[in-house]
Length: 531
Image (cartoon, rainbow, N blue to C red; front, side, top):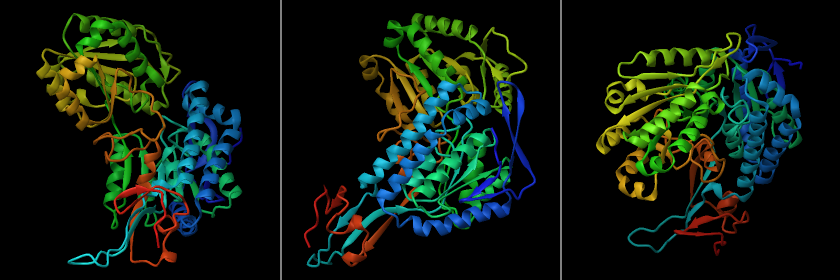
């Protein structure tokens, strides 16, 4: 497949930089031929300046045009067919089936946001009509709603070349909020990114949106990434990746002369608590499910379980034996790229040297010509885990720590010492839950999603989903990067006081021509306001 390897500055192509980026085929262990030009500072400025100009037009378009654009983008991505899937397979090492499913998720979330925009209530309209006779002071007419925030910088994620990348959830939610988007393509899959960017630009042109609604830049240099965050026109940032990179982006956003929000998703250990009732009834089933969850995508999911905690007992011992056997027979899997594998191997070796920790490895041999990893299980007790805080940090890849507690109090202490996380899982019976309300209360403070008798991998894209959590899972636990609530990140509230009816946005006018839900004088209603 031929690629031009240039940066997209709106509808224009640009290749001013001399530094080239090459993708890597992790399954074959070789660099790919296609070259992609790293963006220069002039190209960064051009993309954001164009986005700033486009925003003034984009914020005025109607809901129907916005929704049609999102749906057209989904259709254009699907129309790329096998070319897109084949390129993503080549650059990521992920399977065709996995990426076909991920393409479906990408298109579906674009269409989900289109439905949200058409319905319109996401603007959270709140109206308090004037009370001129109120004593001791009259109340003015107050009308509040959410409006677009401005140009959004989105960083593509390495582990989801489609669903968390160029047209992923950050991009979809920012577009739905009527903001222009500038994507920094992940250097691990530049060809995949070029294909998706071309599809989005076709959708921009077909639906008549302004030039600058979308741009995409290539970069491997962290300074280029930070320059996007620091640019005066950027109004918000969306990022999914490592804690090191996420923290650098967050700091850059906060240290600007005019700080902007940076919604960064970083590390997550996703603890799993095994309560006695569940272990006594099905230790083998739980072990098999957890093994599958920690190895899904070679452990390269942000919700992969990283620590498993239970009270020492015969059933916990049986569970441990089953999980150990599964680990010892675990087969190699291809990781996304060599730097992720390098980090995985280094972290595994470091953790293996921790006093009081036993290491269980797969007995399967690795192919030195491939970017392969095998699962690893660490076993310890709660005392050693509490003494060695590095055991509470994420290792990105197919590994977990099995922790034995010797009392309920020790188990609760482990829970209390956990860092913020995206998910926390409890396996148990209803009676177990009643007896462990304190554990649930602790986990509510630690995680963004609590799971009962299920596995953390697999994130439903729906209105009720929350994919976020306390630091270091994310920089701000109030927000989600998955589901329709993700749109709130790229909106801001404005209150209009005593404005004439004709000068108000349609969503705040008395007639309610959009037919949206509004909070009028404390009552949620779709009814018009009597003049």
